[in-house]
Amino acid sequence: MPNEIVTRGTGGAAEREWERAISATYYLQEVRSARGRDFHGRLAVQAVGAVSLSRIVSTPVTYRRRPLQIAAHAEGYHLVTIPLRGDLFFEQEAARAHCPAQCFLTERGDLPYELHQPGDNELLVVRLPESLLDGFLPRGRAFQGRTIGRPVGFSGLFMDFARSVMANADGLDPVRAPVVARQLMELLALALSEGDRGTESGESAVAAAHLRRIKAAIRRRLADPDLTPALIAAECGLSVRYLHRLFAAAGTTMGRWTIEQRLTEADGALRDPRRRTSLAMVALSHGFSDQSQFCRHYKLRFGRTPGETRAEAAAAAGRN
Image (cartoon, rainbow, N blue to C red; front, side, top):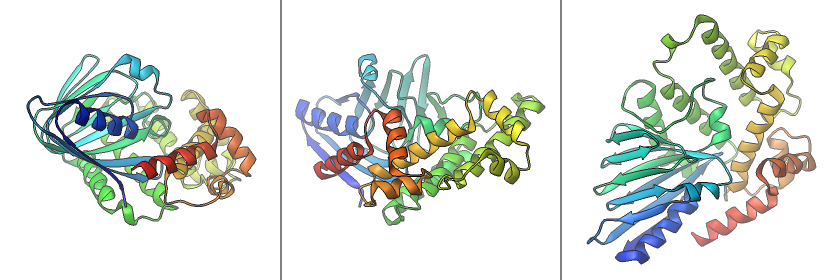
């Protein structure tokens, strides 16, 4: 079952309780409810691989993320918010957006913002690790605060799939959930890059297409510890030299990018309370040769051990 939090009441106590729940689920921010009204909020959260989905139902509310709160934000996460009922008004840097139902909103977690909901509302929110998101977006495509107002095409597919995943996530096999998370990310990347084709040169468009194929092939084989550039190049019908050149143009290497994807997915597995496998099995199922290699890379990336992450996630699940 998804973790669920319910808050109701009047005045500052209800606001503080909801603020703690929202900040723990996403990242630090302030909450202000409508004056003169009782506040009611319901939050249900479901992990799907390294991605989390949540459904929020609340009375009118405003969320603010300030610069000092960002300084305390150790890990990179961004949000995609889909209003199912009620309108959103959003400001981030110079961007101001009105997001009605049948659209979705992208929110950067590393910049201040204000999100205002003037009426009773229901939202579906997808929280995405920045490292995982960067691996899916075409080179040069920044994730930024904006409204996508097309309930058709890839945007419509993404929103429909996100709703379906949230509705069925509780019945997903945790071991196979990362496959669903990757499909969700693929659809989001396609939705964000709709209409970009005409702005790319022929050469850069071909290179971007090859790199997307390469990354998709790697993702399918993340659990394989014997994954090599030669194997992926052969599968994609490219030379190893060209493969290395594509990653170099993107500012990384295949090895670094692969480890980052493995660590991000392993982090999602550690945070899923339904997965009771040992750390050794988590390491092996995400392509690491042994537990010590996994723990070394994990601590270097996240600043804590896998055991500490699992204990933190278990404590949070117990509180909810």
